[in-house]
Length: 211
Image (cartoon, rainbow, N blue to C red; front, side):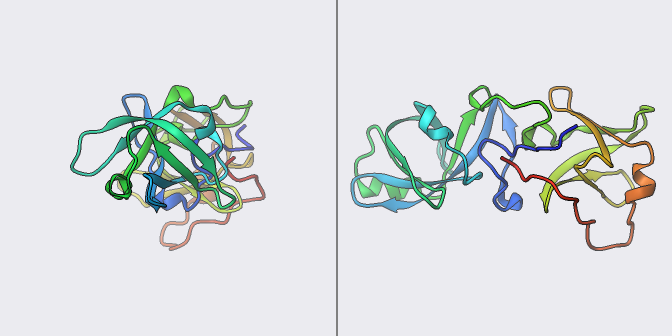
């Protein structure tokens, strides 16, 4: 049972709505590049998960700038700040103009570089698109988004019907298999959680937010 969901390596879903969980070519979006820091090419990098320390373990990242070809940049230096952002300098980028050109870019890491998870944990990107099934094998829909309240809430898209909001707690979620892209929920999940016509999702139970 996924009682301690782990947000993308990056993300403690710091504003889950602005965390991109798209995965392509075994890469996942880790964060975004902000404004320059100083005049020697340093930039601020904002991980989607402000608690992540992963950058300290990496030698390079892929940076994608709108209108340009993606490129792999090697760290010259990086330092984490108390607010969760990082002051980063890349090899070969030594001026404020270089830093300005990166503002607004996205930072991507290899899925294989994500830290291993403990039993019962999962990364948000691993459940996006997952089939949601009952123990009897009936498919309710697919996970399209992960919301964060006091615990994660899966937004399940159901063809021809309103979305189903499933809090990730043992009362509703029996198992999560990220590798198989499968979430198993209790047999009567729809009867318990179907709030068609309501504007707001149900509040989640007590749980630990993404790590």
